[in-house]
Length: 319
Length: 227
Image 1 (cartoon, rainbow over the protein chains, first blue to last red):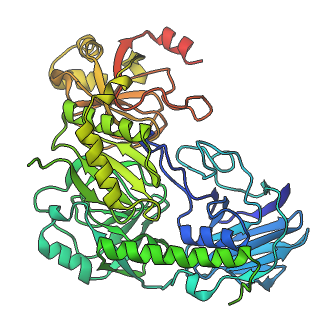
Image 2: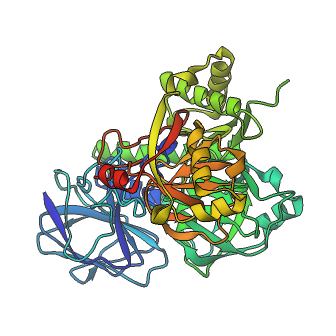
């Protein structure tokens, strides 16, 4: 069903889902949404599977016209969303009529915003995912960013009743966040003073940041011997430190392998906060143990599941 | 007690299992054997695996699989042993048009070693290579077994665009660029074969653990095969 006609695509708008897992042994990057929480929660509001494909919009400047009745939700850090020039609340399932115009304007705090649609975006599955991998020119809509005139279809699905996501379930975005990390896998490659510096001084997010990774500027970290390791797999949020000593965080479009020592890995619940931090802003890192990380992750997951179950029973979504 | 396997946690969602210290054929075979064993006996919660030179990277969902469970399973599979890696040791022959505009760095590589271009090609095609791992871009094979007498350092300034199919040398490794990408390897030739084609089934020509051999073809043969 043709649902959305793109009138302005903005700086960078792509189709992304939960990521292309299972082909990393063949060198295929995972890709997927940068802010996976915003994607999953937006989908949950619409009754979609959590990893359904949505539009990922960078820095606003986006306008699209609905071609059919649809339910949608806009999520992310402070998206400036308007429906027919009226502000539309984010983190909320909302209804649109044919002819309605949805805009995401510039000026928000965050970087990545999501327009999730009931039924999910219907583009072909490529290696098990609908995510766009720009460098490989596949996935999403013909492997490219969206442009004016594109028409997107959604899977068939009934409209859903308006509902809002409780504040407690949204990521606690901040302009200058403190990001929890689990040290390793190669913290032993760094001198102790550098681990201390990494966990105490703030780092600037630099403009050299994109879907592949985020380059940070701050205290330079020193390796005991060498920055190089034998190339190995990379996690979403792995913090590599090349020879010049500045950390580089690997994000959605990261390569599958890398050969620099990694001082730490970002705790998955804090990844949305990190990716949404704009260039020029500060981040601080705080150490979290592996066991604490797992406990917090599981607690969050159970809260999310309780929310989903309440919906499936038709309970009060506003509580 | 052996140092290996050594488990390195990469946050709460990934585990790297190291089976040895350096770049070593036997260590790499054990990595692929472990990967194969885990594929044959899948554990719920494993999202993806990535075998590399000396480690298996396992991405998992902590809600479905604890890292304790994962580590125990890995230990068990390693103790059961077996060279399950052998079933992947098939050999792929790859045609390459060496030199000229398709292999712009062949003269430099030859000059670096004081060899003729033909001698570099002869040495590059004489070896059987082991695919240690696939990484960097979709389908990029890291091949070990290069004749040490043509091992050449990377270019000082990487090229912003290396065409798909380019065959390169970097130190003691050789490899093939499956898609156009930036790269600093010495490009000595190009294959008309597509190492990765997302519209083909299967999309990948070469897999980790396999053997690869190169043979030289003329520019005419290259053009014929390229379509």
